[in-house]
Image (tube, rainbow, N blue to C red; front, side):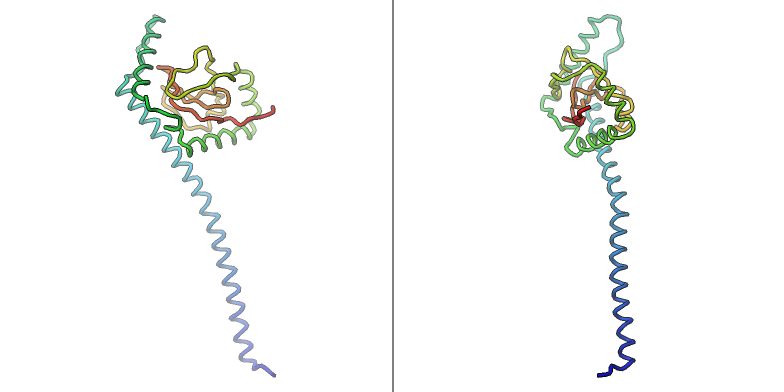
Length: 205
């Protein structure tokens, strides 16, 4: 049977238009999803960093208000130790219910692990690992939250290149490497505020 020309010419544009519309919609949806994913990921990281900073600020506010600030400079070693121990005791009592994760929540800890892993995988990774290897090794230490930094264990410094990719801290606090852990250290009372377990990935280097 012969199909009228008028019917054929009307049907083809409809089918073609529907296919084009379907493909176009899929592309718009795909591109829109990809474009939205980038700022969303960056926005999530920003939110995690802000949460970390607010927790650090809350700790410092509580510490200064209830336990006091760092002791005044003195040339007497005995007074330095006495002031440090006094401040540490106050903080331990003040934070007697403190636990790992109060500041480094699971989301914040994951962010730190990703930042550290990405830095070690970058062009400066080999130098950072070499710096950590050449520092005094800390393998037997078991850092605990709200406790004095383990006596006799060296305060292994964190390589500056690694610090560049971590959120900044108030002058009273610092990051320390203890084995594969990243410790948040309060200098004046020599207290471990919190820590990220297994922050540094294992390596065969």
